[in-house]
Image 1 (cartoon, rainbow, N blue to C red):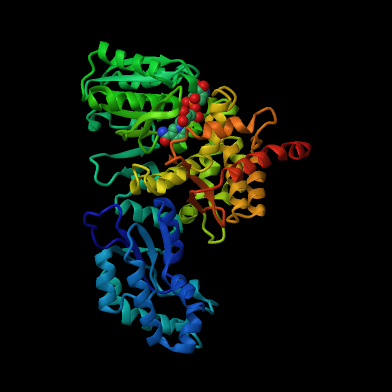
Image 2 (cartoon, rainbow, N blue to C red):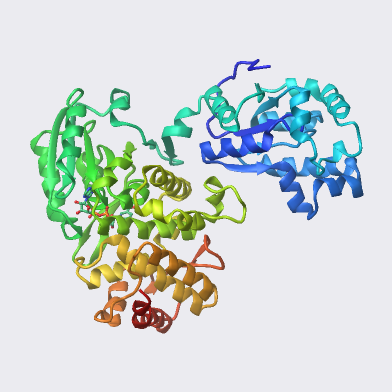
Length: 563
Ligand SMILES: NC(=O)c1ccc[n+]([C@@H]2O[C@H](COP(=O)([O-])OP(=O)(O)OC[C@H]3O[C@@H](n4cnc5c(N)ncnc54)[C@H](O)[C@@H]3O)[C@@H](O)[C@H]2O)c1
């Protein structure tokens, strides 16, 4: 009973629905599949149980099957109004032809199969199955199969689960649907109403088909002092097979993300007569990524560009989403553009050489993602009560030791969150503002210390704690949760407080330069109610902002004692 039908063209965002008799493996295979594809997984019976506040077995016992099927129909309509899900259906849900029509219209429908003896072994002693209650189990299963087999065979794909691991079945389905790239090596960013759609690749550079990307004849690789030579040399040698390759290494540091260096880039492009089809590649952290992206967006009114981020911060955040810019004396990132790259290429091996201070800077942005993304948590954790925040906490040692597998997972997860946000709000008029959690305080700290004392992510981390305090003061966040965030930062040995020598008034002055000022009023992104949820809050009294800053600074002495 292996694959019987060939699969027609598949829209990569279409739902995938799994059906089959009880015990066929719908839930376990579905949740594995969802993990690989970084999609949300819905178990339809679980969805119904949550809505009804009782188990499927109880619904059958108290209300009968007719009632259950009506509830199931309603649930199907709700669930299938969304895209991009993996759904494990109840075993009987596709018998009704209207249900089946809906499911087939809104998903790729796959039947999981196994022989009756195997199924019988799998469901033995499973007392929560209402249709098995008090009967000869095998006979019931045979009868169920006979009555439903026409429906089970009328699906897009039928897959045997016999003698196969859950992982093997999930991978088989991925390969049948041609979703390997999405599952193992690629995220796609498709900006609605824009001609830009691009991939984030996690592959080996040598395997990328650069010709397919139509990048012109010439490339300029921009890098920064501090990025090891071997990365640049390797990239050059790969590209030399296809392009006329130029490179430019710029001075390092936030202070050099300025018009002076921007002009050097543009002059270089002019002197080598770059045309619009040609390509800028940024190899380095967020500084070179932002500035190179800005140069690419303005040279000839926009040429191709590729981001190859080499810091943790740029891998999880700045390389994706198309924000480019330079700093001016009046403030950070005040001149820039929204300009999406043609490709982002991430190689976690680049992180091996990253200095500790810069690695911790990336952890600041990582904690930001843990605080804002609970709706995506199920993509990385299985249990409903678990969260990305807890996942990071549990794996903090592996993260600190830069275990490549763990880093790959968290980077992909952050990018999944960022991609979801950016495709819904490229220009930061709504939800994208949430990515600025901790940034109003953080930018002020960077500016007040002349961009010399803190890296961006370090300042953001301190800003996140100030945001927690501010949220506590307006009663939308609890001190217990703030402490959890502080504890996580401590386990990463991160600074989270404003040192005593910094004047709070300087921070308040610097905040007024923030881009989030609207009609003189600052907007803050604050954690709200739980870890994993944030809101944009306006009209906060300046004295409360000052109080949050002071509290963070004042706590310093007591907390340092514990270290
Ligand atoms: N565009 C966005 O959406 C966005 C988002 C967040 C931050 N940012 C910007 O990103 C910038 C911060 O980026 P960053 O934290 O990557 O800092 P960075 O670019 O200054 O890089 C940090 C340091 O690490 C070195 N380095 C880079 N890769 C290395 C490697 N693999 N091995 C050894 N050394 C390496 C660099 O030479 C540099 O000294 C800020 O300017 C910030 O405004 C932009």
